[in-house]
Image (tube, rainbow, N blue to C red; front, side, top):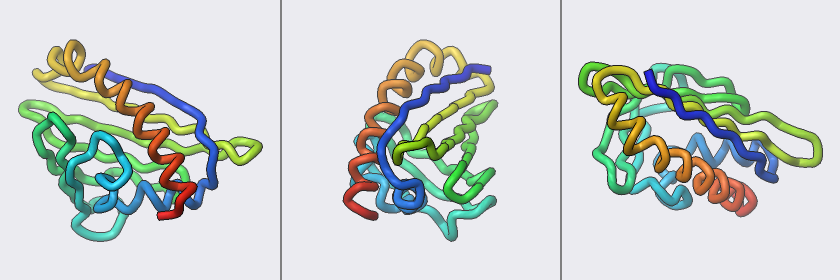
Length: 140
């Protein structure tokens, strides 16, 4: 197993941030690493979606956990394994929000993620959080 975990603090209202992250089809409008995205139903556990990130192959994902305004997680299948990711949001004093992203990869592609995608994912997390902060300020 390989795990990447990072966190950052952004400024904003939790409800506004949640509204932005749960509009999957609009991710490419603000997230700098998303090319295309869709969700095939409501933002609830068990719903599937599809995402194409810039420079990466497209993937089908399934929402595995949804705690409104707090956390959502998803997973997608990889050859012989899976990629699981969680996104946590914690309200802090002063209108700040702690954003935490954890990604776990299992299976034979672990070395590829460790040596190629790991650093890129970490950089992308911070770019995404910055863009999320700006989008939430503008309103979904």
